[in-house]
Amino acid sequence: MPPASAKAPEGVTHKTHYTMAEVMSKFNIKYGRLYEIRNRYQLASIHAWGTTAFSKKDVEKAIAKYDEEQGKAQQEAYYTCFDFRPKDGLSKTQVRRF
Image (cartoon, rainbow, N blue to C red; front, side, top):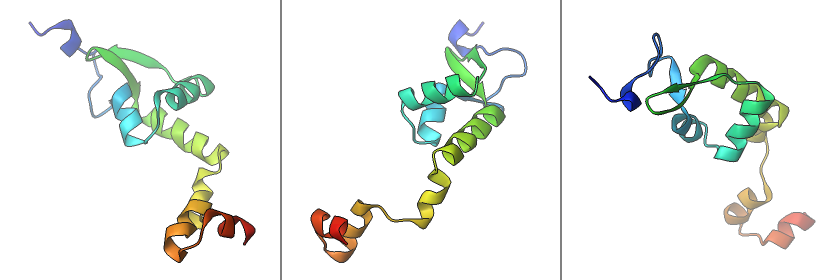
């Protein structure tokens, strides 16, 4: 018989659910951000494989909505101050003045 930490509820697989660590790694977010997203969008969680797991569909939908609200979808169209510096050999002050 496998240990309790190796078990997951019926119908829960790694194809249908992310572990908490997988969410943070895949979407490059820290625990605090995941906690905020989890509370804001009421992400349901289950206990599987000895950790907290979330439905992939729900997580992807919540992260996309969060990114849209935060304007992260538009970030690809813009440079930050720090993107210019190494490219053009400018100092931080020069970039800000420009």
